[in-house]
Image (cartoon, rainbow, N blue to C red; front, side, top):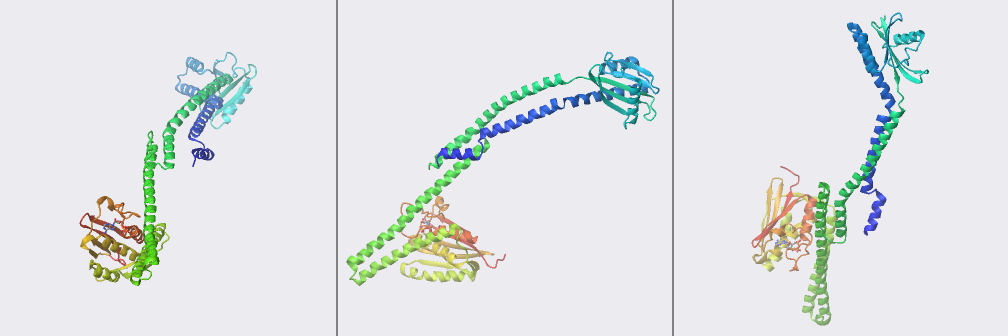
Length: 482
Ligand code: ADP
C-alpha cells in the first residue's frame, strides 16, 4: 500500500495527534476562562453584596456584645462605623435615638427617612424569623443604592431597642470592566501558551511515532531486518520492541514458507522424474522383457505411492492446522494396537535386519482418534527406522504412570543436535537442509505435534548426538483414574 493512501485514510478516520492535542488544550483554556468569568465577573455583584451582608452581621454582633457587656462607648461605635464604612443608628424601644453616626456625609438613608418608615423597617425586623431585615433601597435624592440592615437588640420577643445599619452599594461597572479586561488578557496569554505547548508536545510525541512509521513502511516492503527506534517514551519503546519481534517472527514464517515451497516442489519433482524416466524405459526398452518391465513398473508404483503419501501428508497437516480436522474419539487398548502395528514391521525386520524391541504393560486403554494415533505411531516408528543407522535397533516402550502412560520410541542412530531439537516439530524442518533425504515427506513430526495438541497429550524428544534419539508421547488412560 502506498504511504499517500495510508495517510489519506488516517486523515479520513480521525484527527491527527497535533490537532487532537490542540483541541484538548483549547477545551482546557476555554474551561479556565469560563471558570474565571463565572468567578470574577458574573458573581461580582453577588459576592459584593454577600460581603456587605457579612460586614453588617459582624458589626451587629460586635454591637450586641458591647451592649450586653456594658462596654459600648460612642467612641468604639464611631470606630466601628468608620472602619466598616457604614452609618449606624441605635434607637430605644420607643423610637428615641440613642446613638447615630453618619459615614456618608448626610447621604445616609436612615438619616433621611421619616420616623414612620423607620417604624416600618423595625416591624419588618420583628416579623422576620431571625429578627433581621435586609433591604436594598435606592436613595433617589443622591442617586445611590443603599443596603439597609435592621435588627433587634436584647430579647428578640420584647426588644429593648433597634440597630439600623446602612451603607451605599458602589456601582460595580468600573470594577467589572477592569476584571473583564484582565480575564481577556489572561485568555490571550493562555491561548498563546496553549498553542506553544501543544506544538512542542505534539512534536515531541510525534517524533518516535514518525520514526516507527518509517521503519514499518520499510518492513512493509519486505525488509525484515529493519530496526525500530521508539526512544522517548516507555510506550513507544515497547511498541518498537514488539514490532521488531513481530518482524522477526514474520521473517521466520517467510523463510519457512519459502522452504516449504522449495521442498514440496523438490519432493514432487523427484518422483515425477522417476516415474517419467521409468515409463519411458518401459515404452522404449523393457516392454518386451517381462522381468525388466515388472521391475520398472514397480519403481513407477513405488514412486506414485511416495507422491500420494506426500500429497496426503500435506492435506492432513493443512487440515490439522486449520482446525478442520475433528477427532473421532474411541476407547481402545493401546498395547494391543501397538502389537498389531508391530506385526506390519515384521517383514522389514526379516528382510532388512531391523531389530524391534517392544516392552508393553498388559493393557492400557485410552480414548483417542485411532486413525490419527496411527499416524503418530507410524511417523515415529518410521523415523526411528529411517534414522537408526547401522545398529538397526528400535525400542518401543509403554511405561504406565498412574493415569498416564509414556510411549517411548528409541533408536540408536545419529541423534539430533541440541539446537535442532527446538525446531524439529516445525513443518518441513530437516536437520540437514542441504542433504535432502529421499525418505519421508518432512511433515511427519509436524503431524505428530498437531495430533498431540488436538488430543491434549504431551510430546517431546530426548537425544544425544551419536547415541540415538527417544521420541515420546504421554497418553491418558480411559476412564481416567488417579
Ligand atoms: P522426515 O519426513 O524428513 O522424516 P519428519 O517431520 O518426520 O520429516 O522429521 C523432521 C526431521 O527431523 C527429519 O528430517 C530428521 O532430520 C529429523 N528426525 C526425525 N526423527 C529423527 C530420529 N529418530 N533421529 C534423528 N533425526 C530425526
